[in-house]
Amino acid sequence: MNFSSFREKVAYQPILLGSFALLASGALAWVSQATGEAIVAAEARDLRTSLSDVLPQGFADNDLLGDTVTIERDGQPVTIYRARQRGKVRGAVFKVAERGYAADIQLLMALDTDGTTLGVRVIKHAETPGLGDKIEAAKSPWIEGFSGKSLHQPSPAQWAVKKDGGAFEQFAGATITPRAVVKAVKGGLAFFSAHRQEILGEE
Image 1 (tube, rainbow, N blue to C red):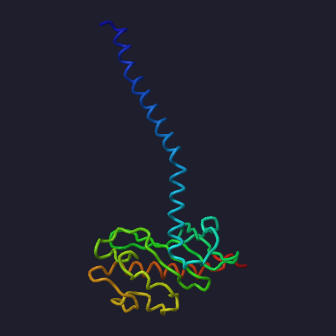
Image 2 (tube, rainbow, N blue to C red):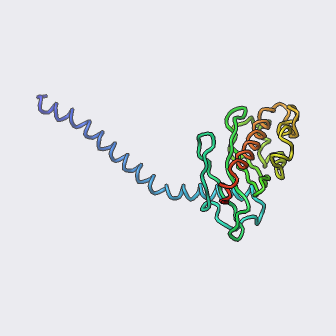
Image 3 (cartoon, rainbow, N blue to C red):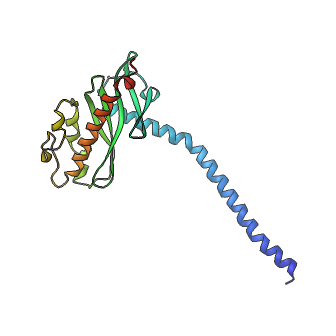
């Protein structure tokens, strides 16, 4: 085999590999573009469902996803969804999080204009099945106990699990989990209180 044919064969392989790489990249880009809108639509639909879960039925008549304000909390942006009835702001919904036993527990909480909780739901967690997962509304009514609560009801000192001298029940063998949820909700109430006028769009 002469040098010329050897050189052609050596160059052929990287060209072929490069061609396949370009084709694969193009295919991936096309699939991403084709499915991107469907994924965004599905995420919006799931978020709307979650927002409606923490609000009383008929509480709002606006599209919460299109009525938001962003406020910084501890250096991180928080998106607040305003709930309106006939154009008037009646409440707000936003996410809070606190470290649980295994990872951050993410919650969605809704408040009325007075800072009273309308509902709280866990939207993401990695707590122990059969123990910490009792924070899920589908597995236990425990999370419903936050409805009607505020920074002053119960008193600030009572915003803790009973093991810590507070008003909220804990789970046998999983105290860390409810403790984290109580802390997250109390922090959300304090955040709302500190930014109430901005959240509600008041002068």
